[in-house]
Image 1 (cartoon, rainbow, N blue to C red):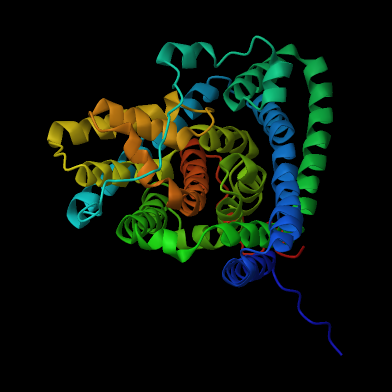
Image 2 (cartoon, rainbow, N blue to C red):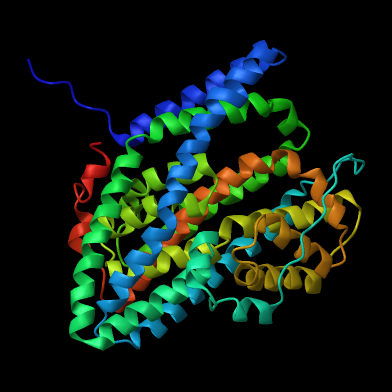
Length: 427
């Protein structure tokens, strides 16, 4: 008798996600007030398993980014290529962010999600202070690389890895010997990524179960128009705008891109963290989509740090929503200011905790809207954060493919090979 076909990783993650949502919803409405359930399940088993899963992924981020960037950089025959890569990647990320927020503002003006909403709210929001442009530029360079790695300061790690890799390429024989060590280390880390991915269905189940014991449909109901509009724009941006870029600039069939991105999208959705999803995104980009490691190891960590398409969409809709709730009219000049501020802030606030809300506070202050209006949308932000992370992850991969194509470092045979990197599915 033939052996039963094993479910793909994607299928198992989806099953874990759906099961977690169902169980969490049942617990909320059937045993929500039970102290035992809250102590041992919601804040016990589910929380522990979910946090271990996310922490395990984050554990890989710093060594993966550093090692893969060193390997990719020291392999470059032309050091000036780094400048081109950086310019193209940052330019693409800012262009897609500008498109995202413009699309969001236009949709919000048309739909008017804030009409009929009472502005009274007990919620409040105190924004953290965002760094200045000069501080961001100075802070790109680590005074202590080890400390940057310990703190997970991604931009500083990227800069140090680039300088280290360039030095290895220029030093000659010692660099060649060291490259062999980093190549082996990179293979070991990638294997660890694959091992952790096999545990994903259980981690996703726990994360979803805990989340849906805490979030009820009644919370979404009062902000249904806002919630559904942000969700619609996020999905439209991810399923229409990105495929257009893949077709026009990468010159490949976008349907294959979307199919191969499913695992990374599911990871992004369940963890709500681009950084935690970075190992899976990089594995997908280099092993399944045909992007060379020298490009992917640079564009993916950079995108996870500065690519804010999903956040920009939330900001665009939220700005119009808050203005309508408070009965304030914004003119064309104010909307242009929102677009410019959000686009530039996507780089300026990189690496700051709570970056989405900090950026929104900056935008609101720029056009004279009350920052306390953020308190109106905090209740549903967690679910939207999950979706916009999946969009951001997709954007990271799209830009990687486009930049790789422009540099001649894109392997179409790998891209069109449905079995390329298939080990991710056969775990």
